[in-house]
Image (cartoon, rainbow, N blue to C red; front, side, top):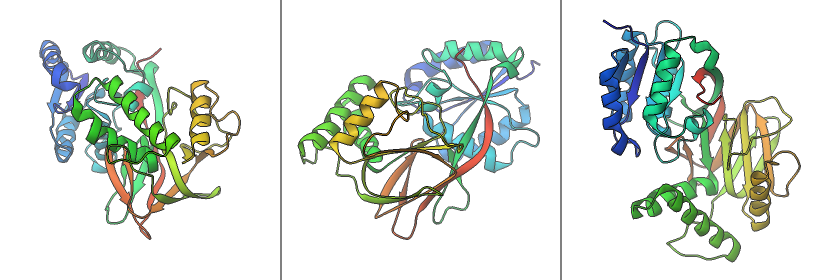
Length: 323
């Protein structure tokens, strides 16, 4: 019996898997050192990892969108399924957004990426490992923290929900869907247009940043991440040593355009932009009247007196596909 090099956890309902999963299954059938387990719901991930832990894989590969990755990371850390050291994680390019996969250099054909990962797992895998700290989200009524790598809040969360609920159902390619969403956001912001067909006005929120004070108001964009790259491929440059990168852009046209221009130029964080707040911190608290945040595809809601708290979690090892 072949030694298990890779355990592959797939979500057939992820956007990319609707067309690519048959090819992935065929590839796994040809390579007995890959153990393939499929789940369709988040509540099945615990049992999947319990089974995967028994085969002691050298590498855990996740084949799904950011929500699938988040569920797997949370269960890996909190579930206690792996008696020894947690296996390193790799992410195949898939889903609608896949910010995590992009940060780790996973782009293009998922089968090609899987083939390369198998080659790595058969050799010295340590040469390709990178450490990534995670976001630990805690909120009222949750018995354990949820772990992830990218959180969107305020206007960004509204925009993500708008794109998912109003634009994606049109059946357009992802790129066109994202462009239409951006046009709708700018139309509302620049011209003050109001319509049920446009994203809503961001709610008032309060963001408490440990040792850095409090931000209050309406924010067109609020993002917290541990990824190296934030928006439009721009690297985050700050002068602090924390792991949580916070970007908050006030709901003003000048602030949005200034932040967008700095991001496109790769200058975000190099100099101060009015209405753009960029920090690296250890702890963040978000509070507002039914204000939504989205952590790697899963929505959470903050309330008055019921804040959402973000802290640093212990790092995990990931495989970087990019050179």
